[in-house]
Length: 218
Image (cartoon, rainbow, N blue to C red):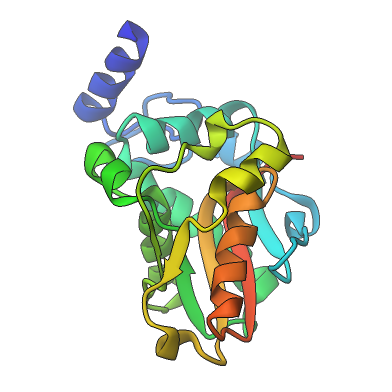
């Protein structure tokens, strides 16, 4: 706990640090140093994977080592300043692997309580920063109801699917009817959350759902 607090304070006081290794950098916004940029665990073939209801999911990086630690700081330690860096990485992956394959850019939302306690929705920030690079304005197409246990605490894939079942609703069916949706999230592990979101959108009339995440497990 003390270690995490120290990291959080350092990120506030000294924002010019490498997002990955956290070495100090010349003044400026958070970014990735040249050494880490050259060693990023970029996915092969976009890390493509299929799900039960989404056509495919691409990811920029593998979820390991410094990437995992950086995402944890961004997601759980309040380091929102990483969002532009992560958004740029994600946008490059989307442009390379999914350009022309979607009509609406959106994200997997947090439930209202968790968003309030965290102060932001990490997937929405990713979508908005990636959208700037892609010249696409993200649209909120899903809401998440309260009281769902975090997927990271649930366990096996079967339990994750059961935990997330019925958790989402479409904000405006007319908005998505006949449209190809691209959903953004920070990490994909089993794909249960993305599949549930995709199922909800398809049942409401979406033509197709594809997904893009910052990181994926190997």
